[in-house]
Amino acid sequence: MCTKMVQVLWGCFLLWNLYISSAQTIYPGIKARATQRALDYGIQAGMEMIEQMVKKRNIPDLKGSESLEFMKIDYVNYNFKNIKINAFSLPNTSLAFVPGVGIRALINHGTANISTDWEIKSPLFQDKGGADLFLSGVYFTGIVVLAWNDFGHPILKLQNCCAQVSHSDVSFSGELSVLYNSFAEPMEKPILKNLNKMLCPIITSEVEALNANLSMLKALRKIDNYTLLDYSLISSPEITENYVDLNLKGVFYPLENLTVTPFSSVPFVLPEHSDSMIYIGISEYFFKSASYAYFTAGAFNVTLTTKEIFNHLIRNSQALGSMLSRIAELYILSQPFMVKVLATEPPVVNLLPGNFTLDIPASFVIFTQSKNSTAKTIVSMDFVASTNVALAILGQRLICSLSLKSFYLSLPESSRSNTEVLRFENILSSILHFGVLPLANAKLQQGFPLPNPQNISLVNSDIEVLEGFLLISTDLKYKTSLKQQPSFHGWEALNLISGQWRGKPAP
Image (cartoon, rainbow, N blue to C red; front, top):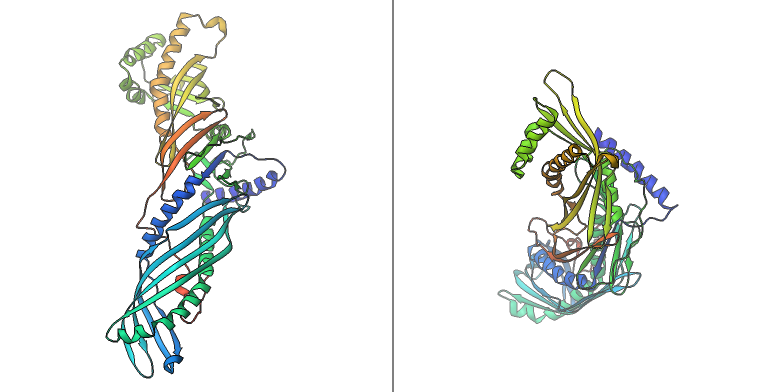
């Protein structure tokens, strides 16, 4: 029931966002750029994917009937089965950006070797055997138009499709193979004619099937028990001669309360680099929305019991044993105590060249609570902890970790020279450094998922902190998956001889 309610709320929230977005300019929280190097690698990875797919693909039997007028045979019923693509080659393949439109694909001089078993029946005879079909002069060109829909999903459309196979060569095997090969050439012409008619519809069907899959992508992703991250597109892809930019919303929301952030995104521009395949810009707005969402969801509230203090503090420093004794001495504690740290405002994010800091305004409370009594506050003070943020990419996630840069109590300046105050400030700083931050870093190890296609890993990654945003430069590596194979959705409806193609809608 709770899950359904969240979905309904999110639907209403999305409609509201669509409404207000028409009245104001929205800038991306994340920019993802693919360069020409990414397209070039896409050719290599695409060949690996297609090779893996076609060799595993079970192609349905092809059945039909054809008259052989040159032999004065009214009809021949045929059945091609156990069809396998044994090898193919697309040596001259290129992808290039078409500014403002999409990506042009060009394939030339391709070849394919296909083997099959066959059976034929006619009024005069029947037979069976094997055959090999060699296709050459495979040519294709077309433009994949990149767009987006109102739900923030990418849309692909195929335009200016032109595909053909120039030559085919059929070779039969069997007892009467010499006879069959003598009239193989007349059979090659209808195969080529009808195959060429079907190629663009088949390719279009594949693009439509891919669109169906893209429409199922989750633009809103649950990160943890506190937040959701919106990855939806906010505009149509920006395409130049050298790259394509995807502008993603890149904003966090509290999981149970889809609150709009009280600040607006600001524009940022990716540098004109081309050495890497992919560049991902993550704006300060992205991290500010994360800070606000986690604060609103109560994720910055930490309570440490005596046992947890010993587990998380004493193991990290030999000096902490004496520190705890000093706390007990200072406040004359003889019973177990607890430490509670809670943020009083959303942490302040600052991205400056080479420097990523997070300033955390919070309250520090030490209290005791015996088994049969209410909590008794011993001391409560506000403080500000300034932390440095270290960044790394692990797998497909951006990992952050915090280290304490400075710590000071929010006290009048006249009180800061007091020896007892300074002593207590050092004690609290140690608790924060050795107890609270390790707990926070343990949770941060799950990281933030970076936008990237399925089965694609990020390699040779580099992170640079610039004014107002992070720049991630990375290459890609395709990882084959035997469990989940791509498929051609048009093949099962193709009849090469009769020219009948029963197109099926994309799933």
